[in-house]
Image 1: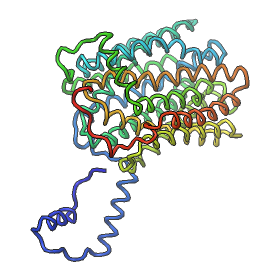
Image 2 (image 1 turned 90 degrees about the vertical axis):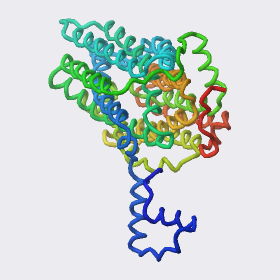
Image 3 (image 1 turned 90 degrees about the horizontal axis):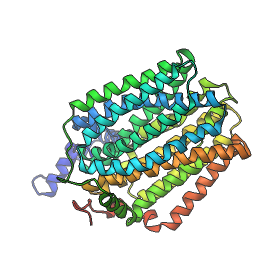
Length: 453
């Protein structure tokens, strides 16, 4: 992990240059103190990018707030769908409504991120998200809220996510140095996990105490904060002047991704893990075993608690260079934890299992993000981020449908257990089938060429 040189480091460097005579022995206490500091650095998150880069601080602040609001809606929308329909399958089918718009918009959003100002793209999509939240609020105020509105807004929000995420992901490498990529990924994960912890818990409380309209209103307000921080940031023009948004440019990005077994491994592992091991659509029904809406919020928040613990202790991640192995092991750990969740006899063990799953998924995500940011040229980051968006969004969306169908056939617990087990098997198959990805070593890789090969 990069850190400021100590006096001992500087003295050693000068001795090697012949400018100093050998230094006196370092007292044992000082050596022990340095060891403690080093241990703390490897056991805690590296905040260097936040300290050094103003625009990165602004981006993380705004995105933390807006994601918090989005996670409130993340609980409220499926809860309302389940209340209106009484069916876990209907909740799972929300993923079907989101899938096609997301697939189309992610590829388009990737091309736009490479051809338009990335900050401007974030501003436009945040404003559009606010309008979608306003529609959900209005529908919840009707005497008879309409289920079809939930499906329609879910589709629109998925499309907006596809348009926004590539610009967000492609903007971050512009704001930090290459050696700070792992730290930036961990900080971005903290932003994500804080929202996942506080948002669902807050959503469950708001639903129970003040009702759905106020719950959707919190999300609406959060976008104002994000828009304000984006306005304070510098513009982020495209890396190539007069870059086009076309099918040809989209095909160029897809071709680059397909040509790299390392990139394909990061995508496929995540799709496999989320398709088989994502039980989110089952939470409303699963929560009924333990208490209902209040418990539902805890279930949604538990993976994020594990994620937060994994992130704030992620200083060690900067010293890992076998990223392919790390990604596979972490994804398999997610599946194993999901199996334990399905087997758990009580709420506490369920929450612990979900927390362990969230921690494993976060470790996988940190290393996937590091691989992407360190190997992809800037002029292709948007399009490749669009492909990344498809990979890590398609899995959960299809996974919700898969888990809903499995629950209808073998019950909620059976669906959770079988999905986690299939996740472990699937990740093993990917590791065997993509040996270049499994052996990937960041220490052997040069910085990305400024122009695509």
